[in-house]
Image (cartoon, rainbow, N blue to C red; front, top):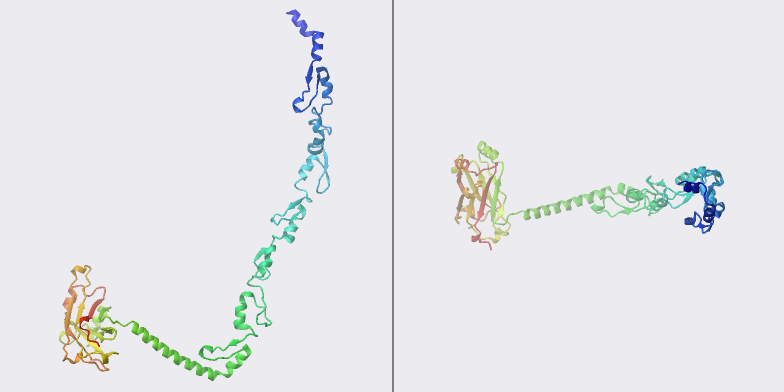
Length: 406
């Protein structure tokens, strides 16, 4: 035990000499140093090894490999001195880092993305005065557009002044040009305000004023003639509409509304007669009309409802055979909610050829016609749904199987 301890404290000179003479690599071999030699020479090598860290030459306190010292002193050392590449001022390392990104002389892109690069200190002035993407108002309409599009807008702006195509001195806004040409242009030709009545005058506005003052009698005659023509046209149109609305089927479904009021009037006054629209047995046939006395007539007065058929003077009576020989039927509809339970009242007759009511009518039709004075009693009207919602329906039908028209 003592001999081993002693050998530890007092190493063997021969062994130590052998160790110091062994070949070793630089401790920075992994960093790229290729040196290798005896161990005793390692310390001297490290004093010059470019990969060995030494204190920063600018005394910032950092340990920097010799090979990186120049880069450290130039770029990263907080105690370095450097000039800003934009403004040229000298700063310490930390101050330069703070200065970068804020230097007023550094070129930066315009925030409006116009593509221009300007010094940071001039950006506000550029945005307000020179930027092609800045918003500027149109001097005509006041709407705001980017500087590079306001000219194109001006060529289309509705409020931009345009020269009058009639070469008058006015320059109306583009959207007022039509009104100017129509109502105000002194150089344009205008038509007389009575042109629709037939006046053919055409000239300047000054000439039109003189023409209007001097031609009042002529204009009055033209307007009078126009009114006459329009009256004839209106009457022709009314006749055409009336012909289109005429019933040529030989059957009329007559809707009598406000039945209660009309019945009350019939009971208060004598001879109150309701007449239906006229209808025809065919397009060129007989012209007929139904007649109704709600409070009765003749034998049915005050107890029954009376119904009649009248033959009216028609346009084609000269081509028809007389006397009238069609079978005529009257149907009073029961408006029951269940059609299967409805009970209509039907009466019909075959005209008597000797009866004067069926001869060719004169210009004034027969006052009464022919029909049924006691068609349906007032009591029967109350028993069923012949009157519903204050409305009654009566059908008058001419049998088409006995057409005797030429």
